[in-house]
Image 1 (cartoon, rainbow, N blue to C red):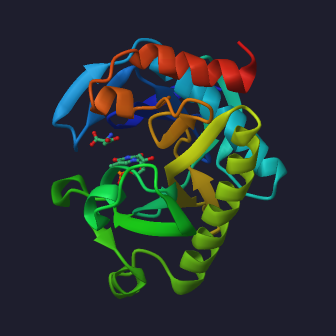
Image 2: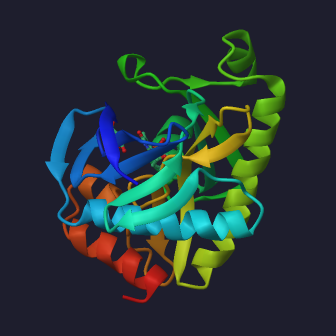
Length: 236
Ligand code: TMP
Ligand code: ASP
């Protein structure tokens, strides 16, 4: 499998075409941004950690009935994935109030939600990824009703599988963001990444933040937090 042409460069990853039109190679970077690119930095080793953590969790999800774009880890930073067209939604699942939800509803961070909360944002950096509901999604044709039903069902399943898996490793899954894509035949699969960049992970015992909030909020020990997640998941 070889990279042929750079297809897209995002804030945290580069995506390449390959000699197989149905497959892409994702290359994870150490670059980190927050607040829609306003804050910029690097987190040493992040690319490798996010690649390995994402693949580990994608494999776990596949085994538990969630179809994903994952094909094969090529190298510490690079992975072969199925080519998809991304559904332009950020799908956010929340178990415990934190971040923008805590702010919006005036909740103290750490408040357990009585029911899992599902949110959708329209993926558009210029608009700042505005939150949308089912009516906006269907009216704007970001996806179909059937796709939205499946995406919601998969997102809740991901939450069940990952929450239970991480709990055993002493990690509380506070919230996370998913993206889905369509294969050439229209099949919906989980895409993008699942990593400390896109999830909030708190140590179950101490409440310590083990995710990108350490970078967003200048809490220090950012690299240590990413390494700790890798260590707990992969035993190293
Ligand atoms: P929020 O509380 O800032 O809305 O974030 C909710 C979750 O989504 C959190 O786990 C971090 C993740 N997230 C991303 O992956 N990308 C983003 O651009 C933002 C704003 C949040
Ligand atoms: N990565 C996103 C950005 O740069 C936001 C975030 O993760 O906080 O906007």
